[in-house]
Amino acid sequence: MDTLDPRALDRLLRRREVERITGLARATIYAEISKGRFPAPLKITDKAVAWRESDVREWLASRVRVGRQSRSALIGTASRTRAN
Image 1: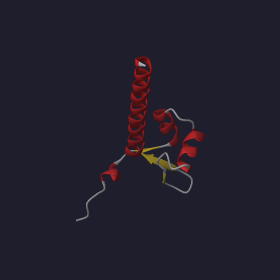
Image 2: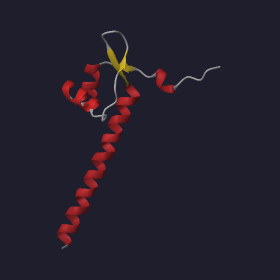
Image 3: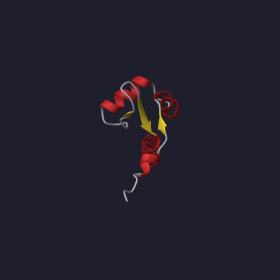
Image 4: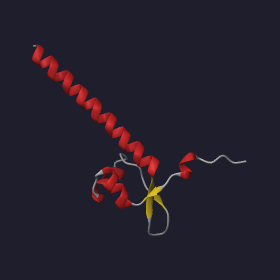
């Protein structure tokens, strides 16, 4: 018996919902895709695409981690600057 990829059971998100969830504009989403920094959509018909919800959520989580790391670095720099 074939095992299903858990992502096969994902909900598919259309572009407007991806924009709403991420806060990104359409042009930004496609620019980030072309730079390899945002998940590419799946082609669901000749004229329609959608994103796996898990891919979009995973991207969001990665952005939160980057933001926390940046904030920690800034706090550490500010503390060292004041100590001098």
